[in-house]
Length: 175
Image 1 (spheres, rainbow, N blue to C red):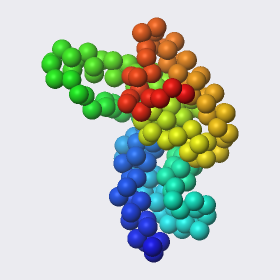
Image 2 (cartoon, rainbow, N blue to C red):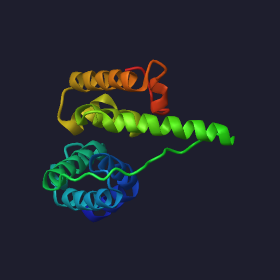
Image 3 (cartoon, one colour):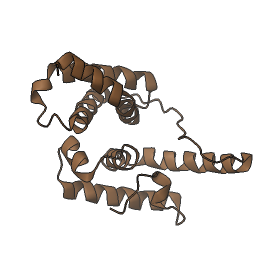
């Protein structure tokens, strides 16, 4: 496949997920979209560095993370934006209670130190495997498991004893 065609496929397949990851770094939707677009340009120019063409997502995540870190270094201002995951509940009371809990969980996740927040987001929301996260963050699988455990532990403390990792999404598997 031609690099240009490959890039178009990646944009269609991964744009939304990569934008979500970027947003969790820069906390500004417009800036996140810009950084992802810049990341795709970098990916296009660096396609020869992709080690496993069958698994481009962890490589693209690494490029996006690097773009975000560079942007954050240049501009230390953060502007939090509200995000609520899709709700499946139907009654008004259920929706209100779920939104309240979603806000609480979201705030707790966003308050985690970056080294715990990023693996939690990649694992529970982006459904990356431990290995894929380790590849993307250039850490060992053991380090990722430790960061996930410590991130979950901090979430339990922040959210109280009633917190269950199932609240992080359907992607939860014991880890």
